[in-house]
Length: 384
Image 1: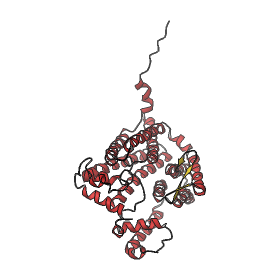
Image 2: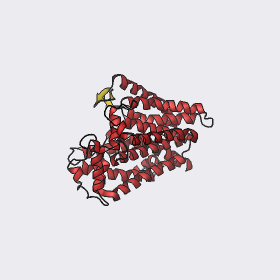
Image 3: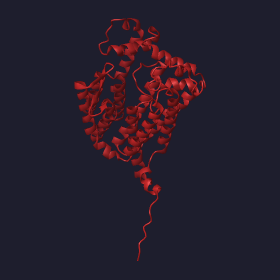
Image 4: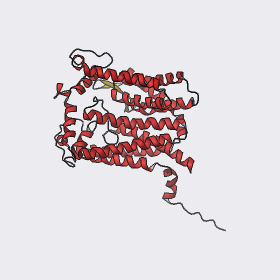
């Protein structure tokens, strides 16, 4: 008697890995990545291999997303403390003997040169989600104090480098976890009102505060200059205000439908600084206009909405908090980048997700997407 074994097809072998993937989330990312490739091809046409490198980085990020999506949320939770501890240790090492470039000490050589602060964008919300999951059902005020301490450590070390953009992203992700864990509104409103008051005072007394020789104490001089340039970019139109002014000119000159693909004069005549990285939104706006901007914004809104839906449906408190904080990262990236290019926020060096050039940022985004996919996948598999 002979036994015949039927060889399974490639699709049958791949299906267990693909099963449970959130197709709506994947579609949103694919649309944004497509817009990014269009913008990169135009803005980076004379930037050597930048377009090809951007495509390669996207493939690497997609691979990371696929691998991380196979890791169940329970296993991700077990990585929280080690990743957070490793990230803090690397930040301390950077402060002690890191590599300095352009006045900032943000990198360290561990065989390869890395920027440890990027790891904390994921490790910090992961750690905080683990913390509140551990105290689920019995959260006390002291637990929130400890959570703020866990958040303050990486944010403080990153600010010291100095790296305001990355510190802002880590802070936003961490605050999202603390807020969704049940932080009382009476503790949320006072700092929000205090921040609004500070902004109002800075705007009201801008001439005096931005005069030469004034020290803001809490900010580095270059950070003070960024705020002052935001309030009045014409103060130094060919120097510190050049970035903001050229970005605003490019966005405005795009009009309703844009100048057309590969037809952006501000972009191709190299008036837009960092046109493939931080200011790629200005290049995109010039060529695709308000219509293209609205399509891009709708894509980000859909991505964020889908992330929040995954968070709401998460099977555990850890999964819900982590998904909400990761979605906040996408929102903060997009909001801050578009805001600084449009002249409503200071220039802090935050890329536009899936559009701007940058390997490290895409790896971080790939990790975040993979974790979101893992949470969505675990929920779907539990229901099936």
